[in-house]
Image (cartoon, rainbow, N blue to C red):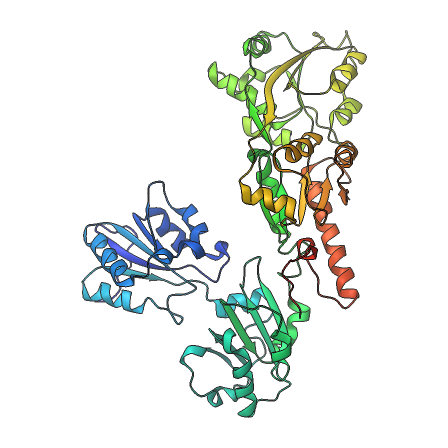
Length: 528
């Protein structure tokens, strides 16, 4: 039976979806769509668990990494499809490239079960691109072989272009010797890349004649690709992934999850692996009556201004509005201030455009520098509402009072120390498993040390400003990086600049760039 591609199957069928080379973001749109409609997903959960984020709640997951009985898995796949369920079988790379699922596809055809094969981005092109090696640029030939199926390497020694070898890392040195024996020059460039397209990617560049000593201490394991040919020589100019400023850095983000999302995405763009560890839990105030009165006053015209000093304050007011059946229209006639970009974005999402956002320092001090003094001729009301955290400083209240305003400083939410993170996280913090920690406030310093202990001395400590730096130093931490302005985005950028300088210094000294965690005693070392 021919494969039957259908967008809305009326009966069960099986989709063999290529997962791509390793980077979860290289999954095709068709693959993501099918995962979103799957009743059953069959995959190696250890390798492809991140793809499950595309699935709907309640999907049945069959983990083949924990079940060696492949025949029983295939039988279940057929039974599920015949019962009308949509089954997605996730395959490594591209199902058409040296795949082990050919027999499963054949079994569907034999059982008269509809199926579809969704190509994935093949490692043969993606890993080379991520390693800075053009797969087929200005070369007469691009050849892909599976080392497990090659008996005579003499057949491939004559390849005039780029030779890509799957499943050969364990026999890389014998393969190189066989190619040389068959007439390939021993000076032919070779690159071996393991864990391609992931933040664990590692590439050794050598030649056929020197591959043995160059691989000796590299610790290369599958999945890996061997690339032979002159295209390897272009890596110095085209490498873009492994040269990111924080490539492979494991960065701890000790914040509330809501606050960490944008920061984590920015860190990923620098090549880092962010790990969000909540140190602060945001909870409602113990006595809600104060907020109830404030919302009533906001609606009845008690205030001229409302000043928001955090996204959490916006969230607290928004939740109160929803409780009373109000929306952003209740802000009509009010002037609204936001302490910075993140708070301003939260207001815009609420439907409120702030009238005042500091153009300079994004802090209470920055807000005060631009806040207008009270003028009885221009301002009909002299009162400002400040919905804030229970631990907020008095700086803003004192400054506004000096400008002639009266302030209702209202507790909109409480910040309390979060529960300790899991034991592996605590051990990584104290043992140097993290390359950097980003502290965005003094409270994140105090709370992280309180729930997990002090970061190891090899870990880079990055802080958002002088006050946070002072607190870190009080806890005996060495501050390595400080943002040039008090924002989380500027802090991430400062860490990236620090990482880029460290990388450049290592290369200038003729050394392999190393992550901070690789400098601790007992850390795994890789040499070129």
